[in-house]
Length: 138
Image 1 (cartoon, one colour):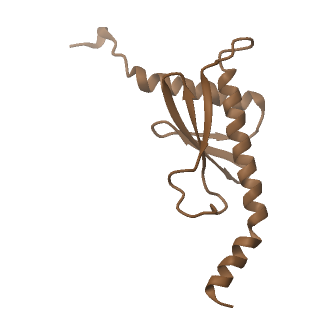
Image 2 (cartoon, helix red, strand yellow; image 1 turned 90 degrees about the horizontal axis):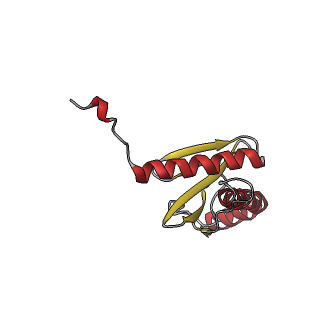
Image 3 (tube, rainbow, N blue to C red; image 1 turned 180 degrees about the horizontal axis):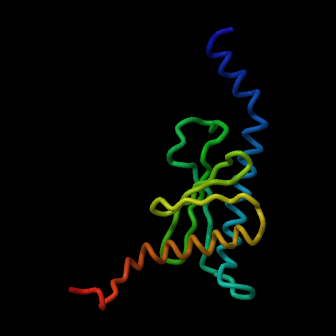
């Protein structure tokens, strides 16, 4: 068997596992979208939130190997944030914005809603900058 044939066989053997991982990560990104829309509380949906699944800019192989990142761009009104997620030991781990990371151990509505609220807070803090306390001026 040539190296090329061996590569094709390895890719075919792992196809089901990769597909399951893609579905899980894309499902998580979709849950996060719905959580962002509901982040303002019951009955107060954020209507100016949208999601575009995108290929992860750092994945250099197609199909992406197991454990690779999956990504989506979320439009939050006037800004966009890229969220990357992957499965590690049954947990979802990811990153967004300017290096903010997250880990979701239990995939419940509350845990994804907490993540959505944290993401919004971090993006607000990024755009708002650090506010100085005038009492600490020399």
